[in-house]
Length: 453
Image: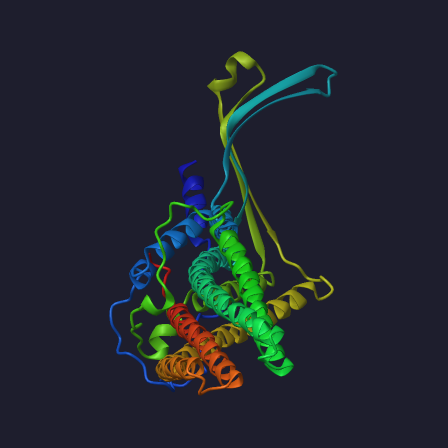
């Protein structure tokens, strides 16, 4: 019996001794060796709490979203499911032992009946994984779990950026609405005064129509800003996963007061491979390679082992007095399957080629996103400075024209032209400030920030 147990142990040691999967090699990244736009030297990575620390309201909203967002919950649940399926795949590589008992009642050749009782430890049909089929199936399941976990981190990264972007957009909408309402109030007062002059014959129909048009334009801008603000508010509520925004949240900052820190960058080859979506694509490639190994193993013989160690007796009272054991070995080799194994292998090879292309595309997309954001960082700052200068100049011009209009040295058209230009410059300044902040959010996301906090 010791010899048989030793043979069984040797068979188990042989399991998985051959791996037919391709060796994993990370594909060369089809990207430039450096960013096209100037980058900040590599430094310590910032958590999202550090990056957005300047606005306590935004930090609180992101925390709420991370705790309650349904999309993030789905991603986390998918990762958990993949983790347990990976454990199932690993368990399939090992024997399954169980306790069994049976009573068989059958007639003998002499016409008498005999009942045989058995009980013991049973080894169910266990495949000796000589060619790595079970191992590769397990490796594929593990790689899919790693891909799913990376996907969950990518979902977190996307959520943090979405909350920040929507929050800044909502702040811009609020400032746009306040600007439009103030402008509307001023123009309605101008319209009221012009109507009085018109009724008294001191103003022409052209003057009245002009101020009416300006007033209607301001009312339209106010309605548009109010609608956009409501929609962005609803989007932020959805992202945070709550019934509404908590009234106890800290006050937010005006766009002009927000100063996001510079994001340190390094070489593309060092930065991009840490992005969750790129990690996910590489893990999916590893899963595809393992599937190729499992498909190749199907061309080789499969060997299954069964065994039982226990007791048997024809009398129930003597069941545990007689020790018995059995074991069996069964081999099978497919000689005709109408090309099923070959087609399965070719399909898995095609999936591997697709996974390579998907990985390369993920790297290229990541490189483009970072490059775009770096280019934006270089130019949005310049545009913001220029827009601020223009807005100040238009404000000064409006102030002087208003003074001249009051003294009768400027016409109604001169005044309205100055008002329109100042209003448009103020709107553009808010929009450029928003775009500059959104570009910083995108750069931080593109560099894989926000997944370690």
